[in-house]
Image 1 (cartoon, helix red, strand yellow):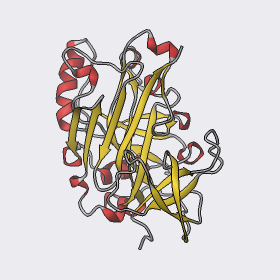
Image 2: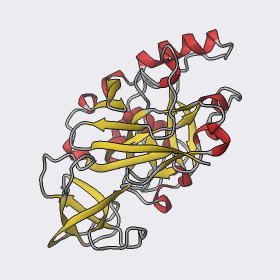
Image 3: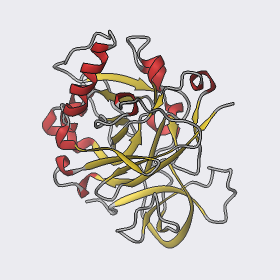
Length: 300
């Protein structure tokens, strides 16, 4: 039995704004508050310094200065990402990709690509950078996703066992450069730049979700709803993904798995829409995860 429903990793008020060395773990006192958009957030402090081992409630309450990614870069290892894993967007993108001369086909197993730990990013007010090398392409794009956090080391687990190793869920934005993505068969390069995987704002414990298919995702570009779906649209379910990734491969505690994005990415719009300097993108995930807010800055 978990001693919390959701946790955030945060810098408390009164700490140097440039320092993450004071990162703490706590649970929002108000169970209904969206910590990603609230102007003030009060938390019940935990004794640990990681959501992987949060410890116990200390009895102290603190005010949040800024929210960090639920996991630190040193905790995630290699980020696993599942591509084209929602039915609606797969149909749309397969059609568009084939029209552009890109050879794609449906698979019987999940399609995996990787992001390095250096791509992990914090919620706003930390800037999300569009690298100088990609700015000239005008092809930076957003992808609203649910991220799975592995809580216990596992290997060769079955689908029936898979959820026993899941700690919880958070929101993610799989930021991508579409020109670089479709210039090659491997997607890693186009999605691996620094900060290209912001996550947050909160992690909800797996016990808070009775039916995975009821989790919903919404994406907002500058306040406009552009993406919306639920995990009931996943081609490969979360238990299937965790089991598949664990075959012959050890998944360590802290492993982050990005599960798939709904229709509505900028590349599939007509006309196509891409992220530019000053744009804001929000990923909202239900069940208390809240809203991941990121503002984009073009590197000069």
